[in-house]
Image 1 (cartoon, rainbow, N blue to C red):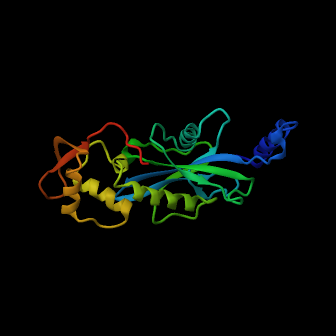
Image 2: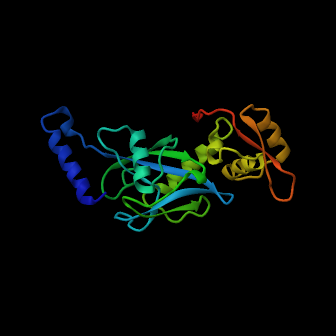
Image 3: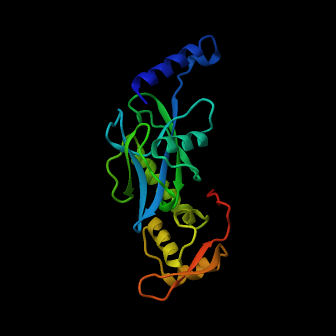
Length: 239
């Protein structure tokens, strides 16, 4: 979004408010930003775009952009994610709002952030729109990010950890069929710690959220591991 475009929006708002009770109020701009996470090569990663235009030109940032007047926040988040990265049709969870007055050097901009979790094998990321490049980065090795996006990513990770045990969010990072070892690894990557194998399996198998597929998969030199799937087709919402 160029500076001239923002100036045009601000001027049109000023003119539209003349003669009304709202004309005495300043009107901030609103954006959406998305933290998209996945697991690649046993590492929890976040999708970043390299910005094509100022501010923070050529720097990395999370996908996002300005909302349109006729769309909801969720629609705007889905649209901008697709426009910049080619990622579409995924579940988005609202993270929160971020509104420090100086978070965007161009204007007073408030952003509503979302986070999304998805299996890497379901994605075909491509750089489009205001992105000159797109890539996956380990959450522990992020480059310097534009705006306040480092803070947004960290808050998304905190919320993800908090909701891990009370929701099915971890299953969105897995393929349709997975082993208990793969499931445990996702939990460990999100929590940032090693879990006891026996206790984890006992707890997860007693929760009735898994369905035995009757299929197996070779893992190393051990005997074939049982493949499971998520018992519910409904995406559970983390509240």
